[in-house]
Length: 169
Ligand SMILES: [Fe+2]
Ligand SMILES: [Fe+2]
Image 1 (cartoon, rainbow, N blue to C red):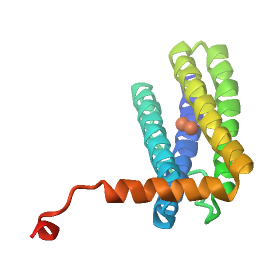
Image 2 (image 1 turned 45 degrees about the vertical axis):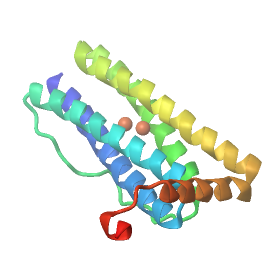
Image 3 (image 1 turned 180 degrees about the horizontal axis):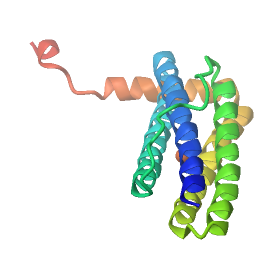
């Protein structure tokens, strides 16, 4: 029973690590292209996925297992914002489906604490899905204007930054 929970928790760790890597990759590229709000969104969600990894790891150690820090797959080198959002939404959807199934499996094995962790994660992944889905919808509706707005936000942020001491001189 314990072994099954540890196996499922480690599968979740693998998916969370993949999400952290993928979203940080997207964050770097959106930032490089000057799409500030999108770049911030990927970073914020990557950090949430890292915190998910931590919760799963704590439970694995409590059950006297080992945390297998192996991502489930390589980072996909996608540079198009629309493709990024579609992949991210797909990943969230799959995680929510898996965690629902794994919560049920933990319940069957009388491990309600692991079940609760999976259920809490489902809520977060559904929220993430919704955020990525909203952005996909915005991009579909507004097209190039959406990306232009992202760049404008970036310019605004740069222009409102305080002057460094060197620039002050
Ligand atoms: Fe997650
Ligand atoms: Fe997520």
